[in-house]
Image (cartoon, rainbow, N blue to C red; front, side, top):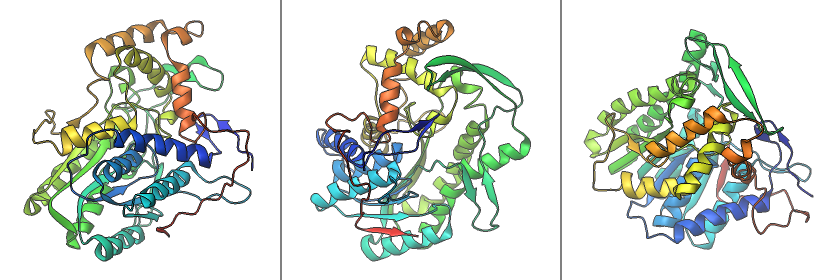
Length: 397
């Protein structure tokens, strides 16, 4: 099959298996070029197929020789249709892990369900005994509550007011205004049910009740805060309400781990191009401006650089370097005063005419296409590829 990108708005409906594999290898090579990470060796990553969760798994496995179990919700390719990028990413991860005799198992299904939790519990009992680190990195538009069976849908809306803000039409490469009405109380609560801390709590409680948490067990969930430019839609909107719920739920999780000498923290990461961030109207324009400024300062980082710093400088550092809310912060480069001053200045001046002068849209577009295995150096996209990739060591539910 000849695989070409088919982009529809903030999604690419095709994925290139060889491109995804090469992109994974690039991240592995980055991690292997760094000093070994001094951390325990049994890691569970909930949401391990793309973005920060994938980089967490790569960092643990190839930076610390850790055994990893991942939870994904992805579709394999067929002879007539490409699989999801997350499937190809996971296939590549398993391939390279097997080449280096690293333990890797993956459970494919709805991470919110009790069925998936039970399958993971069985794997840990059979193969690892206990786990030392749980990374929670789930981004989903909906959640079926395992107790009630009710399906909740998340929304991306402001709270308490209508907003009009700048955005970027990535198809036409032009500036546009985005207008959004405020969320209803039900939409706010539903978004919290999907993207808040409830399921993170359920995972930790399940593993604790099954006696699968090792001494000094640690867990973290990822969040983004950003700066005022994005707050009306993000931090002060429905997604922000869900992320603030993480800050509440982490307190009870942390308290429940005292008997294990354990710890639970929310980790604040920088803005990067992911399938989730691309769907937020304000983010592509903000990211394009941010990339230009951070590249000029030599501080721009992708997911893999962020996760290496998080593990080395925060989670497994002897320093208790938290913010006032007790969170780990590796968004410091993004939020440096000079970077934000320049981003704000360009934001006020940006137009169709100066878009490519004040923002690095090429960097944004390349980062977006790489998510799906396209525009990766060294791949001949004129050649046909087999869209079917088998993952050894996967449980499909």
